[in-house]
Amino acid sequence: MTSLRQLAVIAAGLVALAGCAKAPPPPAAEPVVDTAADEAAVRAVNPAWFAAHTAGDADAVAALYADDAVLNIPGHRRFAAARRSARRLQPTSPQ
Image 1 (cartoon, rainbow, N blue to C red):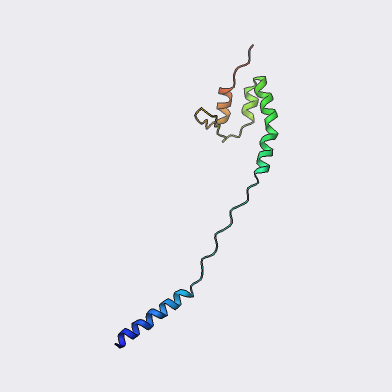
Image 2: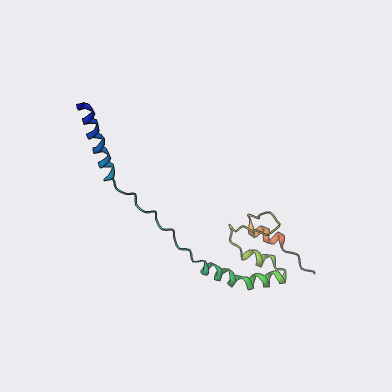
């Protein structure tokens, strides 16, 4: 009977120690993304893109894309090399 009592005391001690464990820290807050600044940057480039496209200037259109840009045109496959793709997709202007 004494060993049962010792086992009960040990179990109670372990439960008490487990209750004293530190709580895990709260998860880190996600960084705040300023989408308004991104939208303003895109809107600032739009007039230059439309002017170059209307003029049929494929090099000017391609220059507006970053080297690692990806074109996502609805109904078409993705173009990973945006600068080369922009030149290829640009219609030629009539001579």
